[in-house]
Length: 341
Image (cartoon, rainbow, N blue to C red; front, side, top):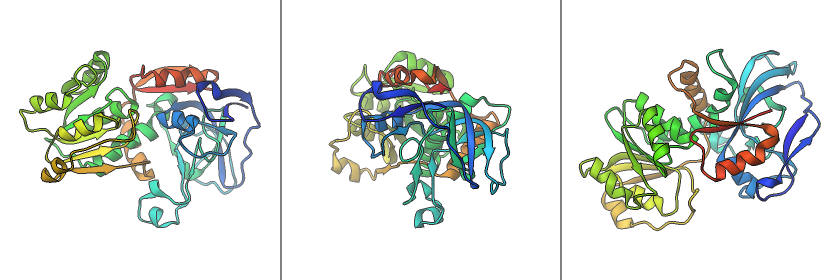
């Protein structure tokens, strides 16, 4: 089969389009012929060496396609089923899995990191890593759900615990997670302030349902603008995935008792915050990594039923994965970037 193989960490040119052996499955595994794979910042960070991997590795933590083979112990799926592939293979036995926090599984294997992933024509996974699609969504849309919609669902519903009538600031509104979060927040009856670094992305965020818009590149004091837009009150919650000098200002956007969930640091890992402002205003800051399988299943049902719709920015051929990574690193995309085998 054809696949994108990473032999060493480095820039996007390290992604090599190669012929490799098609995976062989055992009695407990499923072989999926992929029709679409999603590109995520996680893939870029893996490529750059920010996570430990065993080289060579095929990148890609999520995808969608048709089942080509099933092991004899597989009962829930059959050849020909249309499925979406989930990112983490969890053990189901550790303390985190047993308490429903399988995103923290001690023994997890990660597609595209510790096992070969979806930048390929085929991928093998256990049946618990598959969800059935329906005919209402495309392979490209299905491949866009686990990481972005799963993450957006987790940060808004599980952690920030947004409620109807509240106001939420969604940072990096043009990202995959941002476009998903706008839709989920509006479905939950929440007022959305979308922030992004370009007016073009903000215009598209408004089309998705954002109520108010803030350009944080043009206005470095965007926290003052958010306060103005909320009559000096601030917002109930912030979804923050940029880090760097953006995160402290995002904390300033919160009203007393507000919650901030941080899930990314594309602008830098180290920050300084005013701790006195933090505790005097009874603020909460939560960090998160990964998504539980339940969260992905819950949000995927809403996508299948047409209540949420993934935004696809651009599709690249699998062989052009390096171009897709460069495109993401240039922050050109609004929504998801897809690879087609």
